[in-house]
Length: 216
Image (cartoon, rainbow, N blue to C red; front, top):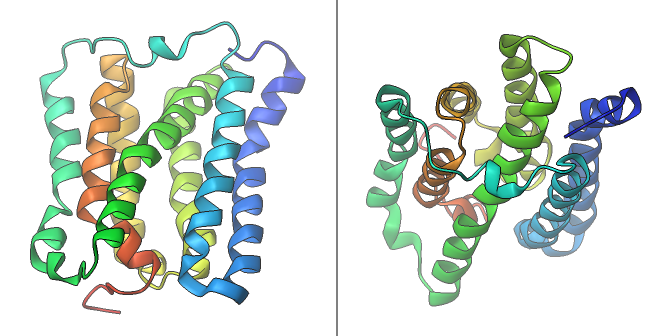
């Protein structure tokens, strides 16, 4: 992991750099392709996360974050319940998928995104901050920036990504996932929970503003 103060500082500010790159990408591409700007944004976002994961993991193997979870049934269960909550949205709105291409893009995003986000937000970033901050402050820092990344990047073109309901849900999810990681010493169940979230909240449909929350 991070070994010196310069790396620690870079790790500390890395969320701001990632969000800025994402915001810039979304803003530029929205002018030309509207909601389809989610594709170049996803590519830039995942590339940025991947770079940070590779750069900050040091000698640690990614397998360490994916090792078998230590027993913590209550927190694993809570993480899964958090993940399943948006499935009601999917069940009531699956009819909005009017083409195979949308279904494939939705599944592709859900399969890829949780790996990059969790290995960064709850992996290298959360672990790296523990050298400077107590656990509660590290959880707060990562969760707040994780939540803000949604309206500041995806919210450039997605109306649903600027919903205060989403902010509340992501805040709870971010805290629960972080505590679950500390309890289980693994990201396995957290990645799976995040996958269910991305399935349930109709990601691609919200990016294209095909699905809008009832209050929007």
